[in-house]
Image 1 (cartoon, rainbow, N blue to C red):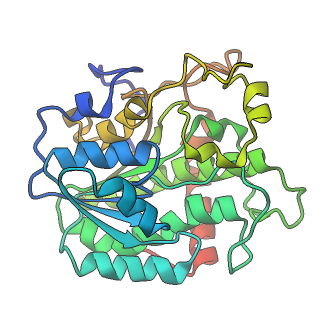
Image 2 (cartoon, rainbow, N blue to C red; image 1 turned 90 degrees about the vertical axis):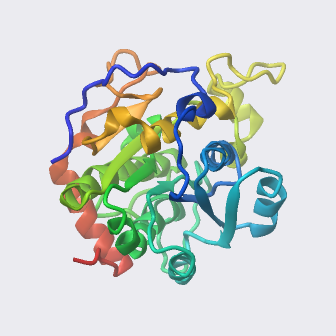
Length: 321
């Protein structure tokens, strides 16, 4: 069953970097799959993991841009096309990965969109939910046989403090009856990412696969491409002179918790937890909305099970026995 949300006395913290977290860890002979690993914290995740000796396979919607960014990095890095809003692309990517490796040791579901205008995929599904959650649900299911062969794989799902917006409505996940709100849709998708890790861990524990949800922190990256500078100043992310808030992390710092969940020995035998700042998070204080911590709904195992069933219905995909 999922581990308790209890800190593990990590030596790392808020300002730790991905390089510091992985220092001294040898990933030679390991295969790691990273979605969206060519932008923002995804690039720093790939940089750190490849430098530790792993074979890294990056799923990229914009493969040309991915090559521009990743070809300059050291290590064994392959780039394959992947559009998480396209079920056929997901299946093709998984087939291509299976042609390159018999085992996946770490799967990092990093790619995301945030606060985008209302859009729908080919199935009519709301784009943030489709891309951030359903696409990764299908991808993980297709890669499941490769995750099972390693005898100790980890799956890292990128969530966000945005999960506090909740928004998860399993009766209307596509905003067909609700008025569309880009932030509520983001909160729904990020809540789903955390609940996915919770349920996946229950499914995988007996087979040696553990799952973790991650809030990477506030970082200025292309993830904010759909927001105007006026919106970002209004939220306090930038000042009037265009300087980013001092509390924001660098991309190297933002990738640290992802990498920590992927490789830390402190998490051996654990799973299903929500992590931030290179530590298992504690419950949030509702009176301190800008402080860290998790909200209770992403620890609701009953809700996680219902989301799982809904995701199977929406994608037509189930995990192999």
